Image (cartoon, rainbow, N blue to C red):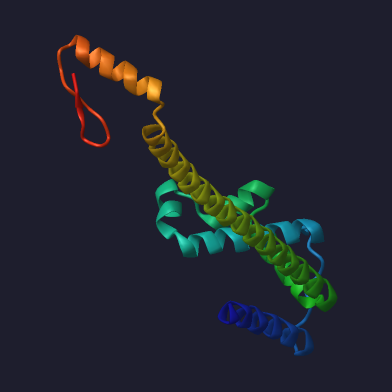
Length: 177
């Protein structure tokens, strides 16, 4: 996490340094991406690039290129994005506000996903404990049923065995005809 955040800080410091240096700030592009849309674009790029880093094969197999996917989703092109990024980079307050919004949104999603994962783990644990309780209670019922066979049931079994001319044996080992 530290490595990723330190990369962002280096990029931010570089661009902030550009504002203070001899670089001339660009003019506002005609097709400037709005601040809110820029937040959405950068957020989607961050999520898709993280997904690419986690499971690159899945994205390669589906043919999804994260940057192209985002550009198509927001109906923008790479030039428009580059010009808008450059413009916002030279506007220190706007730049900071955009990246703070993206970071806050990512942190909020992280918190929500961690909470959902914790609920899922708790649910799996409770289901596992219920299964073991049910299994134990079923075994207990079978044992009780076997032990608590009523005297009338025993007599019926003995009578049915007598009809078949077989010997019946009680729990003490006594044989009956």
